[in-house]
Image 1 (cartoon, rainbow, N blue to C red):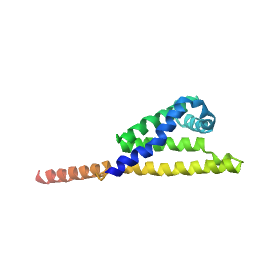
Image 2: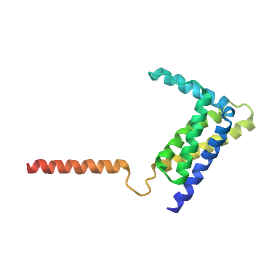
Image 3: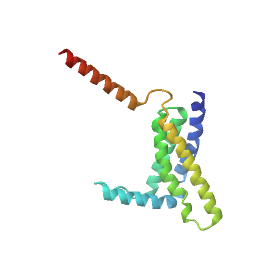
Image 4: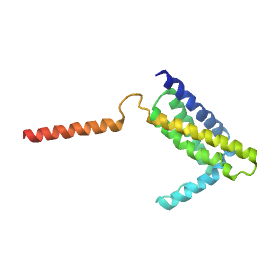
Length: 162
């Protein structure tokens, strides 16, 4: 459908641009990402049998790389459901790290951060819609249930004949 061919590149553009910009100067994003990365690694270290790296810049680069790669694939219409889901996964920590409006005391800065926070929520909604868009084809879940039902019916039929 023509709408998908237009909408996917439009939805992917901010991720590609932002990811490239972050890969060029990741140190600009490290201070904002530090609280989020520290919270994630602290929680993961308690629940996982291995210790995660603590280098915040490494996580910033990883997030940016996923945004560029998944954004490019989404823009090209390749693996759109998977790439939309990956981009949705990068949107949450990016939003929490970059738009912490609840920590701002300056009303003007707080308003700008709220606007970006809400914009990112809207983009997250679009990504979630793209992630569940089957383009009119049956979903994997539907096909699996249908195949299971057919297999069960065939088994019952064979059992009745035996």
